[in-house]
Length: 469
Ligand code: FAD
Ligand code: SF4
Image (tube, rainbow, N blue to C red; front, side, top):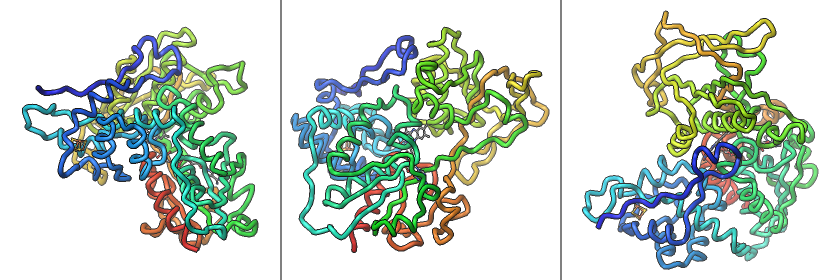
């Protein structure tokens, strides 16, 4: 009998949009067992190559089928430090699930849908969290001569710090914001990744002895040289890509046009939706346009819709994208969820100019229709704006989510730190060492915007090289 994939429980759209509560409930034990039971335990488990950190997926799923959740947790932890986080945010459909043989299987007894590896990973990760499972420290070698500074507390920084601390190395994390976690804290909303999941991982690092120092901008509050003068002899830069890109069109500086980063930071980090109980307000309009097609755009749009509902405003949020749904880089699940929640998708539209009322408040977007042309350097079909196709979209709040770039605070005061034309830090890919000896880097600051698991993969590689004295 062919067994269909097991769907994870989730809150109904009309209920979940009235709060920032987590949408996906995850698998129960019986659901996890059913889904794990669909795995073919392939001789050539292609899923593993699809995972950026090569988790032994076949093995951990086998352990789930045996109810050995503890074993499954430690199998995942060999290559992935934060399974509860990755199980919630990894774009599995472009990674392990895409590589699962079931996608192509013609076997009559097997479903043709890939295993829901991410839901199983989340189940196992949450089991580990609930039971406070700890990967044993590895203090077999003496690394007491190493003192490491980690700059940035996003997934790259946290992962690097954890790897070093488990070896008994003294690690201090320097973070420019008041809270730790990078995009996991200020970018991805609670309805996808609740704070408690991240807090748990940060507390584990504290228990391992990692020291956290917030509100320190390395490059301003303290220079890289000064870290070495303070006795650190290895530095890891996990600075992320925190600077938003803009469209560069007329009217983009009008009031009530936010970058998605600012909009999400106000909500996630500063609890703007609880204003005036919390200090930071966020404006919310009646007609919201979100420009972009990635995860950031989905998060901004879904947050805006929740704010409208929580303020008693009739929901009206649209996503404006230059290409079509096929080319959208966002996770499929987020697109599905956004649509279920009532976000309208408007494809093949290129923003041309924002216009305002007499008070300088944004009132609408003049846009052009597009057609798809030949593929561009990214391999996606290029949108070609149709001259003369102008039309107006009303809006009183616009959110720009068209990409992020490297933060240049540190590189601008550290000329020896070599960067490329995008100001991303250049590293030796084998060791993740930068042009400065004993300074390593990983995550979005190397190679631009990526994913959580990719950032962690780079950090792990760097941490291994940092052990060499
Ligand atoms: P970051 O997470 O950006 O962390 C960098 C940290 O360094 C920040 O806390 C920053 O304040 C700090 N910092 C920077 N400069 C300094 C300095 N000079 N001194 C001290 N501290 C400094 N990926 C997925 O896999 N799945 C998703 O669903 C997903 N959704 C996303 C949604 C949004 C809204 C965004 C913006 C990104 C999303 N991503 C997603 C991408 C993913 O979050 C990033 O690839 C990942 O966070 C990169 O990790 P990082 O550690 O390199 O950087
Ligand atoms: Fe299981 Fe798919 Fe991996 Fe095969 S490729 S071992 S079916 S998850």
